[in-house]
Length: 295
Image 1: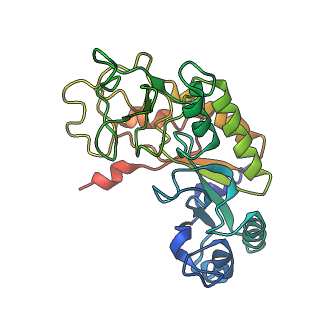
Image 2: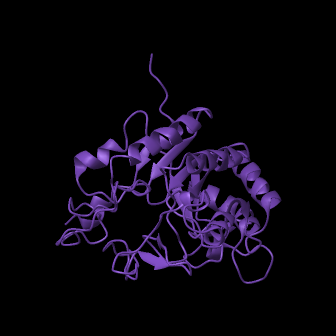
Image 3: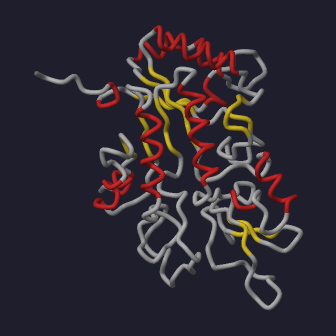
């Protein structure tokens, strides 16, 4: 008996940058109702699944990847009713909906981070992120030599003297995935959208999240030859073994909703390490960025 492949095996995906795709209310900014109004066009193109870029509440420092509330729609793009209309009409036309999920970091305007800054050192609120004392005689230097993907140090200092980790913008503090609260909150977010009919997620920075114990310095040469592919064994910031436990947790949630899937943004060049993300109990698909470097 031949088993029918899952829909995502050969579906035609279309990425929608929500802010610029279609304006449904005439304010000059793309929105969810605008996408709904163009579904007939997308159907004629043969599109079978949409990937929506972040539409969550956000200060928009990094195109919405700095998420302040992962369980609400930014008013710039509409509201939850508009999202529900988009899902309903997409499904009526046989089009699946996948959305961005940002598990590595939040916005600095997220209620957790604002509470962490106010709470002070050694507080439960700070345990949701990576707050560390600095180096140097008076803690005036960052805890280690890690750099941000966007340039400059990967650490910023708060008023009481501690430093917090941000592998991207200072407004995007990294979550502490060693804290069970973080995993529980992501599972809550996933179920929130899956219960609204979402068919899958694209995981931003899927090779991130897990950090090495002790936050060791980046060794000399850690960035040589890697470009944006974080495949250098001397670079401790990405592709740590603990990330696979996180993806197994994510997969367990998805398995509660048959027919759903996750695709990872995996900037890992080594083929063996890349395929580890696609094991039967982890992600369904991964972006193969090695093709970008193909001659």
